[in-house]
Length: 547
Ligand code: FAD
Ligand code: NAP
Image (tube, rainbow, N blue to C red):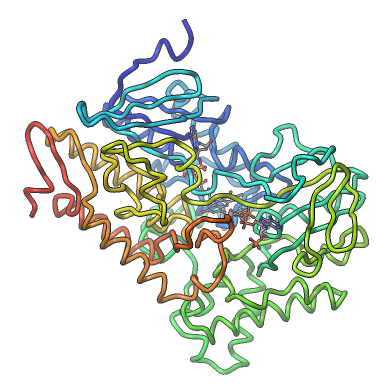
């Protein structure tokens, strides 16, 4: 008997994905006593940290903060080796959690969910997998991740390159030896900025193809200090609670003043202080860097000055400096010696706005008037973020409507948790929730807690179906939009806006109203009988009762 044959064909819940969202769901669903199956495309747990094994990959949220908070014992026992954990260690942590809580028997690996269709006659989802199985479930929870649909660059001849090619988001498990090789890398986002310094140390020569320069702050990761770790562990419960109610889910000192409230000298001193501390908390040096163009420009100019100080070749420094979008409106990067890497003799920057890439050939890349010959190519070209992974699944809701059709003009959700017309389908950190603008661990836990409380409620009430109301969804989409346009974020052609994928609608996808404020809204909606959600079932219509 095959593995899947020994599993029930009908369950209460199907979970798609076994990253940090999926693992926490296993813990919660077990607690609820519901029957469930978990499908994972990869051969192991960890999601992002399973797939993104490129050299230099690490967290840009402090290790002590980027971990589960749901078991005090777990957080007391686990020890991080550095202030910002490297990818192998985060993957080890995910595996430790899976083993410690005996989660693996629930997960079916190497199994892609290809389609999910809601049957209105039975109020159940029919979920098709790449193993040829169809599973029936009352609820379908998409724990599929926001950054899990990697994109290769759409460049003529991309398939023709004769040497090996690697996407940062699908890095080989056995690692890659670039020793002595001529390597080309396309992209200068967060992944590239982490990978470039490490690849440059190994490769014979590295050519970086940059389309848009990025702002980056040195991460300044250090070995974990025992006293620092102890202090965190002694205060974990209180700090985690504070994090849950902050803007971005982090325990960082956030200034209460505007950059305009201090003298230029004082502003410079504060930026210097943040630069010296390192990491993305640079963006909380003042309280208006995301909203006030002048304050933002002061921060951007500070970083430009740092790049000019670090990079010796003046022309290269100017090419590396972002000038036409506000700092932080594309995801701010955290690096380890990124700009310094351009001082190496074996590294060259090609600005493709000056020397456009014409095509990829079997031996290299033709850019401007030059042909660059390579032994290997790295695509650090990012993801079809937030919606890509969901839309790669053939999802059909009421009346056979596909999710692709419904989201043709951009994602529409209520709270980033559900979308009208697709009953009983939840998204963890879906578009319209703080997700990628936050410490994702905090947002994942909040969503998984909310969804499992909701399932417990439905079970208690005897309700079979929960669905976002269209009017509530429309109001939420308008709110998400309104809040976004009060900030500087929409000024950048970022993946937050869908701008990195040709033809993708330009909509600001995450909710920027803040992790704490968002949590309060979700809790208030649940407390009001799941306002804005319709519920149906044999015994109760909770949503209707609350009207
Ligand atoms: P994922 O980890 O993406 O897991 C989703 C899983 O679903 C994957 O394993 C995937 O294989 C599976 N899946 C998807 N579709 C299907 C399908 N159809 N069938 C079966 N399985 C499917 N966040 C931070 O807060 N701080 C950071 O420093 C940070 N660094 C990051 C670095 C990188 C390189 C990337 C790409 C992201 C980073 N993130 C960071 C965001 C990160 O994605 C989240 O922190 C978190 O790991 C997401 O967990 P998840 O379980 O929700 O999704
Ligand atoms: P990304 O930020 O989208 O960067 C992709 C890069 O590739 C950009 O520089 C982009 O240029 C370039 N690019 C894309 N298509 C191209 C093409 N056809 N030709 C030339 N250049 C092209 O992707 P990512 O670096 O993988 O990061 C994605 C997200 O994952 C991050 O924003 C972050 O949220 C997360 N992440 C976090 C960390 C961390 O520090 N913890 C590390 C990695 C990733 P344009 O800017 O012009 O589009």
